[in-house]
Image 1: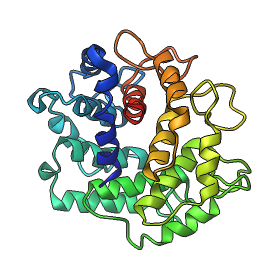
Image 2 (image 1 turned 90 degrees about the vertical axis):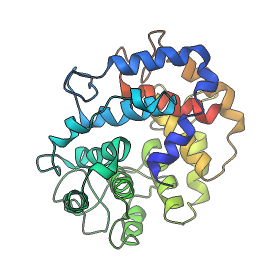
Image 3 (image 1 turned 120 degrees about the vertical axis):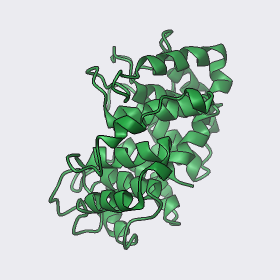
Amino acid sequence: MSFRLEMLQVARLAPKLLGESAELVEAFLRSRVSPEGGFLDRNEKPDLYYTVFGLEGLQALSVDASTIPDVKPWLAQFGEGERQDFVHLCCLARCWANAGMQDFSTASREALAARIEAFRCADGGYHQAPNRAKGSAYGCLLAWGAYQDLGGIPPEPWRLAECMGGLRTKDGAWSNEPGIPVGSTTATAAMVALHRHMDMAPPAEAVDWLLRQCLPAGGFLALPAAPIPDLLSTAVALHALDAVQADYSKVKEPCLDFVDSLWNATGGFHGNWTDDVLDCEYTYYGMLALGHLA
């Protein structure tokens, strides 16, 4: 099962905890659809990245498929990703997977995959910036997921293991970039999840490190020294721990309290306690976290 479908399967459990508030989430996500066809970013402009989360958020709510906005005409303007950066290339693949890959030709899929492959690094990984010698955890995860959405896996997939090894940190985790001495929750969660998709057992110390990033009062820190927990770190950490069947039962109740503290009655979730803006991305991550806590 692809990363996209794996996350969607879990997020579909969120309505059990949302109850009647699921209708508010649906209304919020629909309010983020632009007249052009895509979902709006934080600057009120339609964007491929936010469209990923808008589409998947509505799918997770199990709304009538015929009522989900048809973004295919809007997606068509991006062609095969000729003018997109790495992140948006991967998002274009994921949007088509959500909207209906059958309407994106085989030739277009191959051309899009080739553009993603142009971000391959000498160490076998991928980086979101061009012409890098070493890959990043974020780049590796996005590329793997995009290839899955396009119906395949990266060429010579075993080469990613070399990159992943170069991102290990002395504290037993992973950093997003090489040479950083301390691990990050999002990078470690990405690498733990990618290990499973590559049929590799992640190091036990990395799983233990992830668990230690959860505060007693709930919520995962992005970095050990971070001042407050955040929703992205919490959602992806829970997802990675669940993927390797780690026991995180002790943190469920406090994490549920933390996610609830980020809920907004208009139907969205804030990214952290200082975040005043609601968007599709964090709302979907709120649903993903709730799915794991349901």
